[in-house]
Image (cartoon, rainbow, N blue to C red):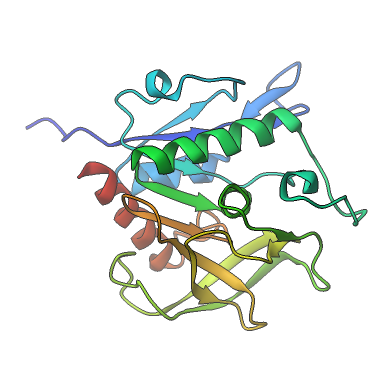
Length: 231
């Protein structure tokens, strides 16, 4: 019997100044993230960021969208001047396309999972802001995150997990319908539900791809996302 069709998951590519296998600048996604989507039952597809995209055409036959991690959003996108020397990798085209795609996803009820930068971008798209630099950044930081809601929708078998974080910014003012559902020990938001979405839509501040083969909860979340995309 042939394998059932895998839901097609669009993952917006990230600009890179160079990679070990390209002579010039690249458009990339983390290998482990693509492998995690595959292990969860999905077909990961990297999209080139293009200004003015017709998403109705580009997302034809796409079942879900995953907004991945990446570098920092330009603070001007949430009405602030840059106030930290730690802001890095700002790319106006990347910001433009990220925000445009997120808005299209919400308008059209496509299942959505956001990770790290993806969650920050989505909060800004919904009118929220970011803390430009944490006093104690979570770089190469692994800690327990506690969920207070939505464990069933996320497919979680327990209300806590070991989150592998790599971020120096966090959500500050929450956007419209951005509902906190998990927190770090320090109190900041580590996972959200997008309450105004027309379909399954959640965001994580950490990187589930880092330790999904050691902490089953990471894979459970991705399977819940893929199941929603399949439906």
